[in-house]
Structures are given as structure tokens and as C-alpha cells.
Length: 95
Length: 191
Image (cartoon, rainbow over all chains, first blue to last red; front, side, top):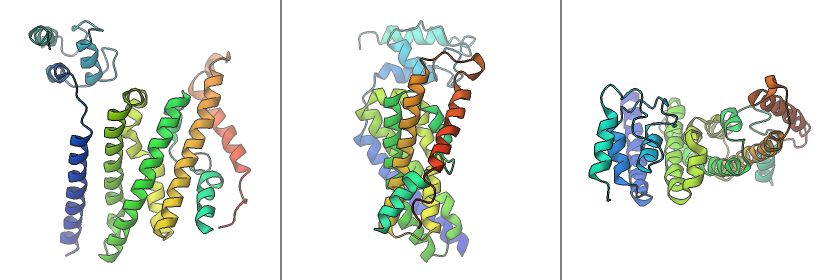
């Protein structure tokens, strides 16, 4: 019985807090440049820091802001990430 | 009266950073600049107070249903929720502070002061008001520790130190000296 109750309790708590967070996330949503999301999706997402930024998100922001060239991602070089980023930036240049 | 004793006890006499040595990671991590230290202190205080209120009710619920062994897990759930909430709010309202705090903001979740206060509240069987004041004292104590430490470290930047002491080593030595100073508050209040 204890197993059922504890599972139930944690499920209810988790659901309650999850709902609260989902609501808060909508309420405090920050409008970001949509290109940042696209560039982030193109990156390998390993957060290695080889580009000199704290993580892939920070690097994506810097690339979109034009602060660094798009070929700084070392782990993504073989997979052609730099070309993908250039493509994204070119297609959505005027946004 | 007792609530103020609890407040000052947590703030000075049993200062969580200098006497109980909890929350050392953010204490060393975000004490390089005064304004980020203040931001971190208030963020942690907010999470402390809010999570203490919620964990107080959760603890009552656990006691009623005889599931006290779930205390740690459910408390962490509450804390993580509030940290995430604080992250949303700071990101929306103060992007500069969000950038400055960086990885240390989500790491409030693993700040042992917060779990420590929640568990101590449960163990000491504090009333809701006492729990709130305990959390407030702990949070302000953390803020005080960060501000004192950041102030000293900012000045320390200007001095020329032996190479082997630069950065963290001198910070740890400093922490021990301030900690000894805080020992002077021992025995000020008997709870």
C-alpha cells in the first residue's frame, strides 16, 4: 500500500508543480530571435565550450548577433555545421 | 520573540556559510562582483522563503500519510520548481543579472542551504511562522556572507599577490578568516 500512496503523492506533487511551471513559463516568456533557435538546433548540442562560449546557446546567440564567424564549432566541423548555420543566416537574413 | 531569536540565530550565530559550511559552491562562485553577489543573495533568499513555506505544508502532508521517508525527494522537487520559477522571472526582468549569474542560477537547486533549512525546519518541528523566519535568516545570512566576501574580493583584485595565492587560494584563506570572525557570535543567543 505504501508504494501506491507514495507513487500517488509524488505524481500529484509533480503534476501540481509542473502545471505551475508551465503557466509561469508562458507568463514570463522571453521573445527571442527565432534564428537563435534554428542555429541551436543545427549545432551538435554537446555544450563542449570549444568555441569559447559557455554553451551551444551562448554560441548561437553570438553567431546570430554577428559577433563570431559561424565556423567556430569544432565538434560540428565534420558534419558541416558551419555550412548549415550560414544557410540559416542567409535564408532568414531580413527577419 | 522566539521568531526573532530564530532569525538572528540563522543570520549571525549559526550563519549557514561561515559556521555550518553549507552553500560554499555559489559562495565562492558568484562572490567576484558585488552586484551579482547581491542578486544571487536575493534570489537564494526568495527561493529559501518560498520553498520553506511549501515544504512546511508538504512535510505536514507526509506526516499525516506516514510517508516521511519521501521527505528529501519531495523537498528537492519543491526547491527545483522555485529555482526554475526564479530563473524565468530573472530572465524576463533582468537579462544582465541572468547573464552574470550564468550556471550558478540553476545551481541554486543544489545549494545545500536550501535543502538544509527545509530539513532542519522539519526536524525541529518549527511552526509555519518560525520556519519562515528561519529561512529568512538563513537567506539574509547567505546574502551577508556573499556581500562581505565580494566586497573584500573586489578590493583584493587591486593587490599584487604571490602567484600561488591568486584567485581561489586566497579566497579560501579569506573565507576561513571571516569564518573565525563569525565564531565571535557564538553563545550570543541561547535557543
